[in-house]
Amino acid sequence: MGVHATKVVLLAAIAISFIVSLFQSQINPYFLQIIIYIGINIILATSLNLINGYAGQFSLGHAGFMALGGYTGAVVSTTLGATPGGSSAVIILPLALVLGGIVAALAGLLVGIPSLRLRGDYLAITTLGFGEIIRVVIQNLDFLGGARGFTGIPKLTNFFWVFSVVSITVFVISNLVNSSYGKGFLAVRDDEIAAQAMGINTTKYKVVAFVTGAFFAGVAGGLYAHFVSYINPQQFSFIRSIEIVVMVIVGGMGNTPGVIIAAALLTILPEALRPIAEYRMVIYSLSLVIIMITRPQGLFGRELSLRSLLGRLRKQAMPV
Amino acid sequence: MLTVERLEVRYGGIHAIKGVSLSIARGQIATMLGANGAGKTTTLRTISGLVKASRGTIRFEDVELTNRPPHEIVALGVGQAPEGRMIFANLTVKENLEMGAYLRKNRAEIQNDLDFVFSIFPRLRERIKQPGGTLSGGEQQMLAIGRALMTRPRLLLLDEPSLGIAPILVKTIFEKIQEINRELGMTILLVVETGELMIEGKASEIAKNEGVRKAYLGET
Image: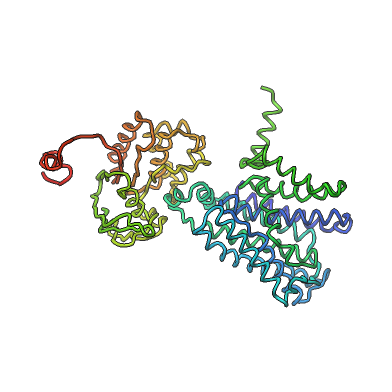
């Protein structure tokens, strides 16, 4: 698909989000909540996939970026005094989200710098530490509510905002990696020295991946804060980061459609398992183990695209 | 074309290169010989910017290359096939070659060079859709050289192109290198570790040998 065609898809997706949001009040609030979480997790997972999957930089700090976006957004909207349903929300929420994204992106730039010298496990540990530092700093800032959390965030997030941002995230990241510029990400992931020998500025790619990924994580944090209306530092611990990493790995590193599906599945799974109460997380963990044993390349591997999927179905439909 | 003067490289406390000087004329195939650990690969990597020089200068066509980032050096016309081939294992042969043309815009020229690579390494055309990681050692070497050619260098650096490939292919690879030099008039700097034993004897006797004096001491 060319950029033009994907633009049409993007606009269509935003239009559909708008139409669906008109009927939002008729959706069961419990289901609506799960749907919103799916959207937020898709944003988190696809943006982390840019860093981990495409650029091959193992980051465990995504919850930290999300926290920065969430808290920044909360400060912006409470300071400006937005009210749910008020006309000012149409301006204030995007402003809060974008500012949250920018703060997270600046942090991404800061984390991106060690990634120029560190690789693999070392980078993972550094980013993990960075995410935790963000959390602990917030915990000790009194004007953000400290460990008690930040209350009274206007509930501005709805179906439309979440799925518009989902569409924009997927659009930006797909176009970034599918462009001729984006091929550099694959080269950096496969072999950094060879990439340099081809004239690829590997430094720039790694920083672009971190900054873009962190930006969208920050926006997702903002959406989350304005949906639950109360955030506290515990919600952004490294366990959150690991949940997002799991979505990326289960979906297939560097496979955007796969990661989207995995984000949805792994959001639904713990909810669908609620009837079995205390065994829920056991089954959830067990299914992750089984997936990793049987599909180490992720549920969908690296190759899932609509075209290859259709091709496979056609092959199965036609007996040879 | 390329002048290296008193190049020194340190890895931490280790003095890997202590004052290497060399110069290469346009259109030449120059070969750097030496034992394992002598610093040949380090010299090459310093020229291509992958390793930082601690002292000395590298000049290429009147441009100072010393300690520039590697992607700028490629853009200035120095291409390289690094030691150990370093193929993009998950990308196909075609994608690997296209990655070589990463900095180039002119599609017609890129296609031309792609055709040239396939004409000297027909094996690569047969493997065009195969992931680079599934090729044999010799084929990967061809791909590494082809990919370096796709950067359209005026100076091509080849690090141990015969390392770890079937002996039967070694001769072919070196013939191809000569062909590239002849057809494109490309200057090539080659690093080779293993050579054939040509002469044996006491150092003082070897020093008197006419062939050795010609080859290594520049006598005519």
